[in-house]
Amino acid sequence: MTESIWKAKASNTKATPLTKDIEVEVAIVGGGITGITTAYLLAEEGIQVAVLESMSVGGGTTAGSTGNLYTMVDNRLHHIQAKFDDNTARKVAESRTTAVDLIEDLVFRHEIKCSFKRQPWILYSETGEEEEMIKTTKETLKRFGLEVQDITSTSLPFSIKSGIRVENQAQFNPAAFVSGLAQNLKNNCRIYENTPVHQIEKGATHILHTPNAKVKAAKVILATHTPKGVYGLHTTLFPHREYALAARLRSGDYPEGIFWSAESKTHPSLRTYETEEGKFLITVGYHHKVGQEDKDKDYFEDLEKNLRKYYDVEAVAYRWSAQHYKPADGLPYIGESTDDRIYVATGFSTDGLTYGVVSALILRDLLTGRDNEWAEIYKAKRFTPLKSAKPFLKENLNVLGEYLKDYPGSAEAEKFSEVKKGEGKIVEVKDEKWAVHRNEDGKLCAASAVCTHMDCIVNWNNEEKTWDCPCHGSRFKPNGEVIEGPAFSPLDKRNINPQK
Image 1 (cartoon, rainbow, N blue to C red):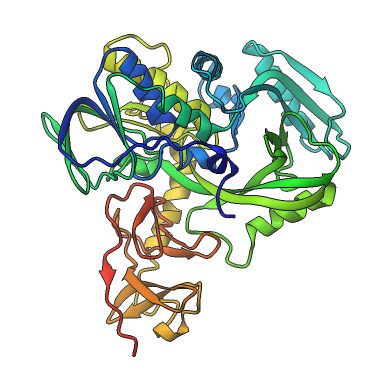
Image 2 (image 1 turned 45 degrees about the vertical axis):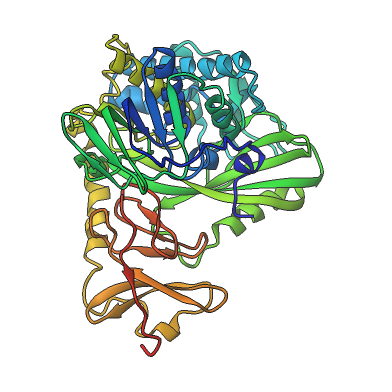
């Protein structure tokens, strides 16, 4: 199944689409962990909120995550310390620890059935090549108040040279948490599913256009993982995808904990998830830029091969992938955007579950006029050219290269007949590039291959059967409908002449 185990095991909120015009104080676009937690905190303050979710609550990026919660960050706290300073790294650690504690409090306060469990985080090296990095990580974590143990063995079925263990981190089912929290939003908040926002008309009162109705709001929060629309911020966000499997074992022990390999090419991250149906072993890894995957590589297959080297796998029950946006200077962007009273929360890298809740805490304080000790370090309007220069230049040269692909004769096929069942190809028709897909029944559908966000040419993602923009990460269904990313509008439809 190309569905995450989290989504499969979560209950449905059964929210209906928006069908009539409404007016609220705050409109939140996006019903993932960022949007729903922010809505919960604002509603507690007596603020009238509406959440507009294009699909199902908790069913997007949140449901595609690892389900891990931790103080650490994927690029290591010592990198943030080196790039910024001790104070910034300490505040990152404090904010993330507070976010995990809030999730635990909400789970027990509302008795949310999401398998929340405190677990150790373990970073290990099999070869010893990353021993120095592990040592630096340990020293940095201890410096910022975490208890760290050296280890020389784990519950994994292979030996290690070195490693560290940090207690009191956590795991849960993120989709079940978000769905459960949404069902406890009784006052001051209305949630609408299957309600994509196609346009935001900015003004003294913002007007959000959806398929069947409009929403007027004094303030707007874009909790969409990356801001919808065109922002300069998109040049500092680098979209990537990562892959995951959930497998049942025929025999052998399921490891308990959050396991990170310091040599990521050897083993992706691992964790166990226990359900009423039994246990599953989850592995995550192999990221690449959106729309720029290796066409000759099967990421799911490679994950499965790695898993089967060390575990007696009975069957792979779920497979899925998810998107994340790496920020240029290593920190998320949270707060008011360059548009007045429109707020963003983005650039979480692979740490989005915890950063989503950090965002909710910051946004609540910003919108209620309180001071927040973390708001300044994550400020969306910050300007950090020296800290961002190298990744900014590298990634935007990559984007420029994708734009340069839109030249005559660069299509993948000359005729529609070259597009096989289950495939998608770029076909040039009268000097225009079309995104053409043939489904398993042999029926063709076509749309303009020009992304409606900033006019980059989309690429076919054969693993997930989607059209992906390699510039800023917008993704579309085979028929051109928006799945995620900064694009508001679907790809423009085209009528096919079968003789072509």
